[in-house]
Length: 541
Ligand code: G4P
Image (cartoon, rainbow, N blue to C red; front, side, top):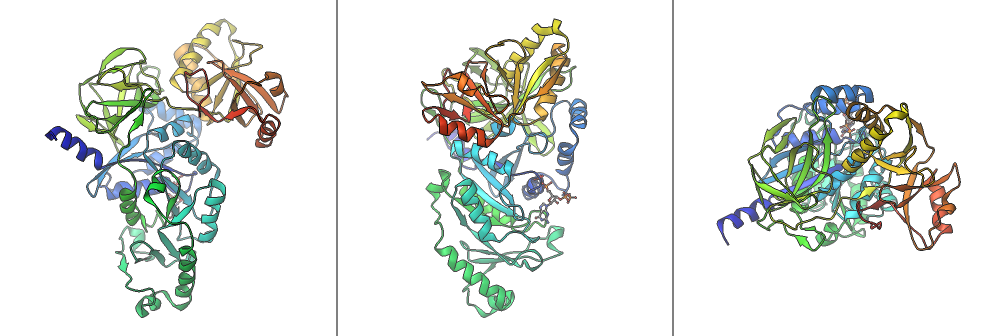
């Protein structure tokens, strides 16, 4: 083995690239901040808050912020070193900046942390993000947060995850008491007790886990109190008959290890991080249109999973986020984009450290690069040193919000069409048409409402087309496939409608889940598809 391949193997082996999936307010920002503190990437608690506050602004404030700062500050990739690992944490925008980018980011992750507020359990956004992870079958580790507050019974919480998400749970740690009676967690794998200490831990002083020689040990019983000890024993026994943990099943997304803690009190976070880094996989091979590429392949390759447009009209440039799939990146290297056949030199790539961006000299499979782009790159594009590497595209996810475009100046129809074509290609929004009206009055579909505001702003500033919207009453959609597809069956306003996307694929829109389920029942020979590969004639996922 050459020196270069030894270095590549070592660099890949220590990389972990993951995202946190959660519903707003579950504690993602707080958890992220603790992780960054451990990694030494930030030194002050509260540094991440500015980002959180930014994402909580009203939409118009957000636009103002974006304009002032140029590129989005609310979405990024954070990296930090921890215990010999090189960690890449992908930030999934979650508040009112929830968009298709949130889903696409998961395409670049090798694993996910599912963060759950233990008082609230599984919430809508958790479900959506979980489903995207499931499409890719990536491993998911669960962190039950806010144990310092009265929450749901831990057995009920696990039951809820299994029932709603359909993934078996295997608790690695188990809470002792909850809310005011919360005493800490027992680590079933390490046979240790992590005591929760009120007050001190809130200041960030972490307690060390204590080895428990035997669960019947008198000192252990005494430290918990007889009643809490008895409950713990009973629950631990119950868990013995629960789901076993197998690494291979976990890696295929078939079981989730569960940890309990409190992010804001820095309780249980570090033991969780250590275990997570042991369990989560190093960068994995990725499928291409003809085979697959291994991260240890010395030839550099990667794909674009997100494009962040600059909201400032004076600066049209944007940042394309590239996930490196194989090999080593060195600044200034030349790559080819098989879609356009163009060669480009990656001379000013960025990496992200907390709120700073730094020029990167070298990077490895698993890392994320930010590339300045003048409009040549698209979501899903592959970039590789050698020719012929084309990764499978990033799916397009079915929208949940629909607005018909109302043109305010009909003379600008051409500009509008050009703008929508380009913005749709960029992945900023999805564009649909009513086949009877074709080019007229397009319908925009998005997974987050902020996308509409962004499009309206960009159409005005970049294309000179002034629009407003008429909201359509649908809440979900599916691409429909099958020999027996007949559009008229999906023409039942206001509860069901049928449009086509720019590639001509029919999309059925439903007012509610009930309407979708009815359509599925009544059309057993048709397939209703939630995510499709762009650029292909047929829906795939
Ligand atoms: P998000 O990014 O997922 O939206 O959640 P974020 O971290 O902003 O946390 C949401 C709220 O939950 C914050 O309170 C945060 O302090 C609190 N929180 C996070 N982890 C825990 C925990 O382990 N226990 C308890 N009790 N609370 C937790 P806030 O009042 O909205 O903000 P702040 O004023 O505390 O910053």
